Length: 125
View 1: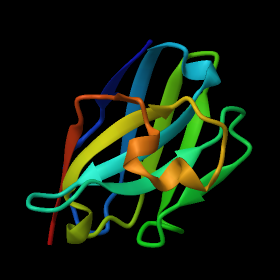
View 2: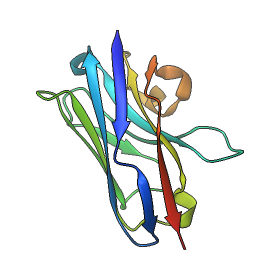
View 3: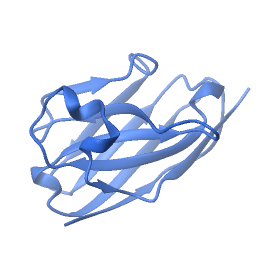
View 4: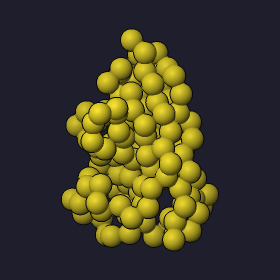
């Protein structure tokens, strides 16, 4: 069982930065971790994922070069550093845990068994 709690969302101007945090309890150290987002009226979409060791990462094309995912297994934390934010980044951001091995399925919503409640990120133009 994994419990996830996100924090760090807020309102920021375009070009600004935010750092999201995800505090995990339970089996996070055995999980691939991911960040997803969902804008109003749109489907939940993949943002970034990180392997159990933290060595491998994968990003959606829309955030590549601007966002960085990282983890601290000793503290059971996962982070998403978001730079050069754009209005189209506005969404609720979710942290999620995937118990399967690292593979191409890390981009798929159904691959993740546990989800946080989400944190709102709003980027003004």
